[in-house]
Amino acid sequence: MYGADGVTFTDGARDDLYRIIRHGFEDLPVFLSKVPSSLSDDPDQQGVSTEWTLTVRELYPASGPEFVVALTGDVLTMPGLPNEPAAIRLAVDDHGNVTGL
Image (cartoon, rainbow, N blue to C red; front, side, top):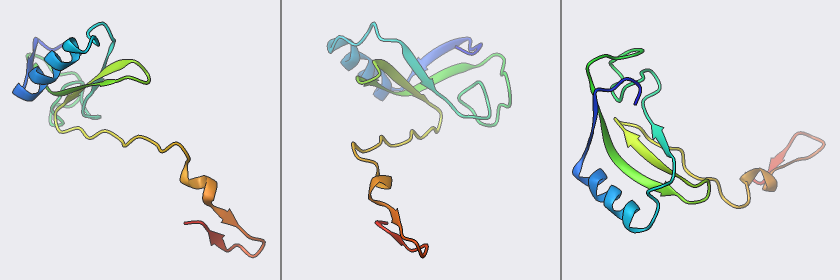
């Protein structure tokens, strides 16, 4: 992936992989979550790295969009959105006063 020489899995990611297979998600496409400044899992490696191994630290299925998320490096994912966005409760009156925050 992204020119890596290979892939390693942390013990936790290996457990996640077995769980994904056990639950029948092994045929889903994989969405790779990586650091934004590099095509590797290391933010200090700018651009396209050479001679490196991708480390996957966590895997989980996203059953709604039907893919598996692979987390690499020190990446955080965005939280999911609620069924009803908070913006629905917001209102601004004719005087510019905001309610619903």
